[in-house]
Image (cartoon, rainbow over all chains, first blue to last red; front, side, top):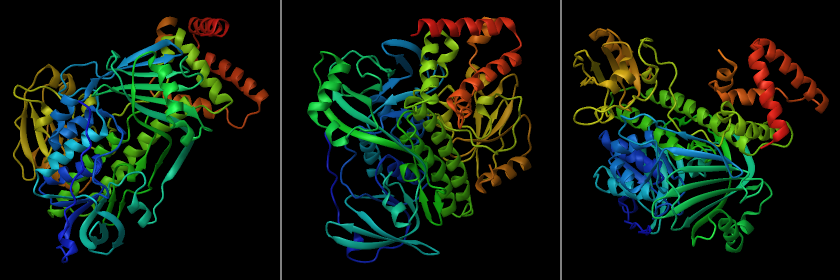
Length: 517
Length: 69
């Protein structure tokens, strides 16, 4: 069934009639990142207001590849099952040079994970599911057609001015989260600018509806015969929608390239004689840039408002959700007076680190896909030739290194004999348990996970007995027989010990809320 | 380790290595680029120090250049 965009109603806010009480949190933007922020705060019992200038979900598929980590986050937001049920599950990618397949990769070859490596699901579905979930939470106040047009930062609060169809009003909030995308109004109002690289290469992006038997795989072509000298990417989405990205060159005219008479022949060369209908077309260039800081006093930036990358690697929407995963529990702990405001420094430190990783990956991919004339092109073209003959060279072919969460540096207390997959700073690996999955039992608050050890019940944490099985042994114990893991509310490992004491754990829990681990 | 095993090994951080190699050609004239490439070949061959491995690399690269994709 084809997606039908619905309009969400405008409800005149109280602020149009009388001043409203100061809010804990206002979120600008009801895209996937803003809505995720609202739900994550709600999970922690924090009320918030979401302001969006529009009254519909995204037009066009936009972000479509949602990573395993994002699905784990969406699980905690209450829409994981719905997203996986609707999405197209995939884990295999194939890379071609011309018409020859150079190699393929399996992103999740091992069993014992609740969620797949990736699903493809149009952003409009994710937004609709998140809006449905948010609408059931009394502590989330969703306000459509409420456009931010001014923001003033005071010592104790931020004051925002909002325009609606019925007039303007002002609101005060302790914290303001900017989730208003790459063209962030709030970034402009604060006079903040991105730093980084802009790329001139233009790409055509088209969603087409078509009956076809393409498997659920990512397919990438360097110099395909159907699109001479350029590159192309194909993804299958739900509802028989296919995403096709075609490199156009730096001198393509976006207005001309979007015309039906120009798009159709290009698509025809990709899909052959199959009937198709164009659902959405756009031409884009991209940037690999970020703000120098994501926290500016009481204003916090997340998602595309804070950092932007090229789409090859699915690092846009996924990194936005990872921002919120990192931010939500920290902001809630600050508002509940369980943590000092300085905890936000760790959001800034960890997520700018994550953004730099994403930008580095994205920049390298872009340079490989669109090499400059001269030595860059020579290297790229010779590697493509070499990869046809030599398996080792295939690892060098870069059509997008797909999104995985980074490992936050600087978290001490590691037991080096334990497996690297669960080292401090990394997201806790999933594993099956008798009744559920391990990750379903982590999150929300600090967890002391005892594996072969009775975990102590300490203030500010929840003890968890982990059942030992082959997956837990492989991912958490290695050659060891027992261990204690300290897991943050965002499921990041904050320390691990072969043996420890209650005092040591108490101190480590305190450090979690101080942003030191 | 046999030549074949080494040739099939994919080192970690290939993207960083790739950028290092690209970057090392910066600011060289076309003539200097060829000189530099030869020097790199000799230096890396010396570092590898295994005639079987170097011979395998020579065989592979000559085959690719002569036969193309």
